[in-house]
Amino acid sequence: MSRRETHDRPLVLVTGATGKTGVPVAQEMLESGYPVRALVHRNDERSERLQALGAEVVQGDFLDLASVRSAMAGVERVYFCYPPAAGLLEAATNMAVAARAEGVEALVNMSQITAREGAGSPLARQHWLSERILDWAGIGASHVNPTFFAENLYLLTGDSIATEGKMYLPFGEGRHAPVAAGDIARVVAGILKDPEPHAGARYVVTGPKTMTVAEMAEVLSEELGKAVEYVNLPLEPWRRALAGRAGFSEFLAEHLLHVAKDHRDGVFNVQTDVVERLGGGEPQSLRQFVRENRTKFLAGTPEGA
Image 1: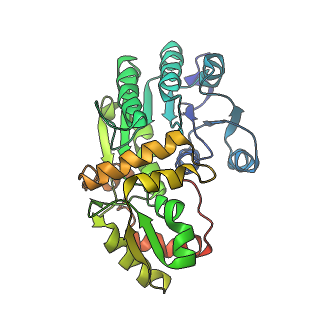
Image 2: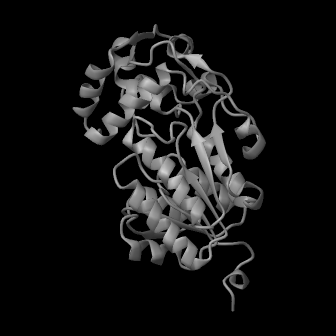
Image 3: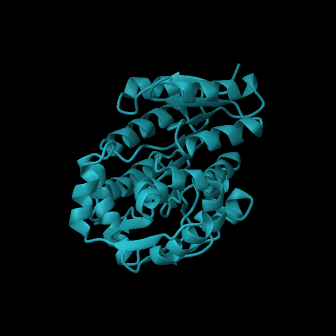
C-alpha cells in the first residue's frame, strides 16, 4: 500500500514546530485535514499541546542525519524552519538529503529578507546558500523571506518599553513593514496546501505598511496609553549589550548587528501583498498587533520570535 493510500491527504512534516510560526502552521494544516508530524527538539508542554491538537510529535535533531531521515519517513511535504543559530548549512543539507531520498514533492523553507550572496551576516549568507542547496535537491523547494517579525519589537525592546518608555535600537531612519508570525504562517500553510505553482519561488513577506521605528513608537504610545520614545543607538555598543543578555549568543548578536546595518541601508524598506495573495487575507497592521499583544509590551517579559 502506498503512503498516499493510507490517508486522504499528504503527510506534512512541520519542523521548528513549537516556534512562533511552527505552531500556527501545524494548527492550520491539521484544521484543513492534513496529517501533521511535528519535529521538536525536546518534549515539553508545547509539544504536548501540539499532540493534543492531533499532531504526531517526534523528537529529533536537525544536525543528525539519521534523526532527520527518521522524521522524514512517509512525508510528502515539509516546512523547514531552523532557529537563528549556527549549523544552518548542515541542517539544510540533511533536510535536502533526507527529503530527496524520501521523494518529497514540496518543501517550504523559512529564510530571511537579508539572505543574499555577500551579506555581512554569516547567518544571512548561510540562508542564501541553504536556498541554493534546497533548490538543487529537486524537492519542489520554495522560500519564504520575511521582513522584521513584529514579535521582535517586544523581544528586543519589551523590557525598556515597560520600565522606561524607551525603544533602544540602532535602526536609524530606516523603514520596514513589520509582519506578525501568524501572518507568515498563513503564507507557509497556503503554499503547503497547493505547492506546485510555487516550486522555485522566493517570496518576500511583509506587513501592510513600511514605517520608521520612530513612527512605530508613536503607534505604541497610542495603543499602550503611555509615552514611548525611540532612542537610536550606536551599532557596536548595542551588539555588545545583546551578547551579554540571556538567550543571545555571540552568533545571534553578530547577525542582529548586520540586520541593523541592513535596516539603515534600506534593505528592509519593502512592502508586498504576499500575505494577502498566498495567506488568504490581509496582514495585521502594527496597531492591531500591539493591541492584541498589549500585555507583552507592558509586562517587560519579552518572548522569542
